[in-house]
Length: 157
Image 1: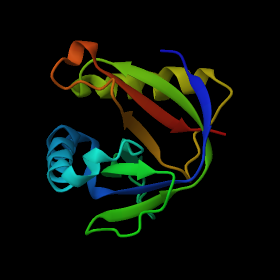
Image 2 (image 1 turned 45 degrees about the vertical axis):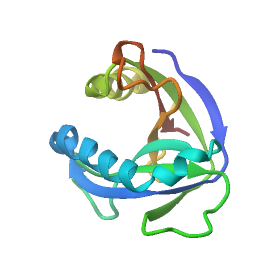
Image 3 (image 1 turned 90 degrees about the vertical axis):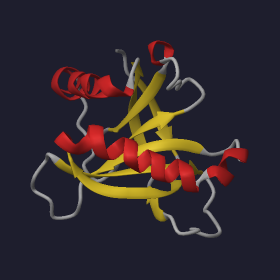
């Protein structure tokens, strides 16, 4: 996997979030996405929205295996109404972007590569004050995961 580098503006996100451990992701993430997609059907008509899976560390959490995951839609414009969703704002940042190819069930392999191989051998550090996220766009295909792609955005300094 090769990194691309991008700078993103402020993103406004509506979705559902839950605190979970790494061991719980295969169970809790699909359930969270199901809950989000069921309630977010009216967003499907808006082509300007990006579908994101966001990871962040809870404040005061010293256990690196526990994190907050959010399934949501992001926009460059603020939403007028939260409509019962959790809302967060992601500040502008520079990101290293990696493309994961294949099933979401092997996404952890891509994160292992990024954090255990690429980052230690790069000149970059992760910005702990920013969220990392997965971008699910028209290349994501849950029906044909062998041809599916997901971009992973890692905030760097």
